[in-house]
Length: 303
Image 1 (cartoon, rainbow, N blue to C red):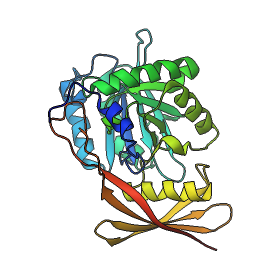
Image 2: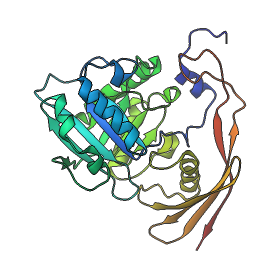
Image 3: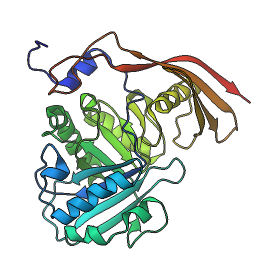
Image 4: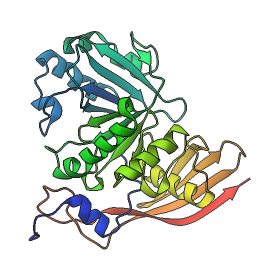
């Protein structure tokens, strides 16, 4: 690849890459406040105690579909740090919050029990949502260039709710915004977009134009949800409930959702295809690649 210096996010926007069906998949998200510099590999490169690193590494292999992010805010030093366990379930997602004096306190929390919904382990259920903006410049320069301005804009708008986060997946979609506890991912978000998305999220509505998908769904289901919402006009977060997804072929799926209010079943058949365009996947890429893009084959409703 012989391309002049570039930002992968700008290249993605230039070719109008579709972002639906690209959200990182995860049912449980561990958010550790680490108010220091982040290396490219946040956990390994951090100065956390060795026992804490080992415990978190073990949890990442023991709990299905679990993700770890470092988070921080621009604020004066505190005498505690915050730890969140987010459960991105379709029904009743929540955020369990802990305020801990030292990082070693993470060793005494039964994270698996909280993740399974069996206990709070001394934490409290947060009564407000969380907004995360990836600003992880050591991972990809786009996250710093586009993410940090978005964070600053949202900080002025929703101060205590918004956090900077480490790599969330999809550098080329920077600035990335994630709304927890539902785990809603949004792509190429500007400051104005971010304020509108957060406003709508408080009212439990989606902004489809920037939507990447919901973390608790697989990528084909994320894409099907997008198409069904676009065709039906059902943009309330709780308007739809996933019923199932059937693989019809190597690159074809049929997914169905039920409308909570009417009981109508919405069904979408989708196909994934490689894009015509080729772009670097990150700012560090040394080659260009085609990307998966989903198309809607058919849509129908069943009373």
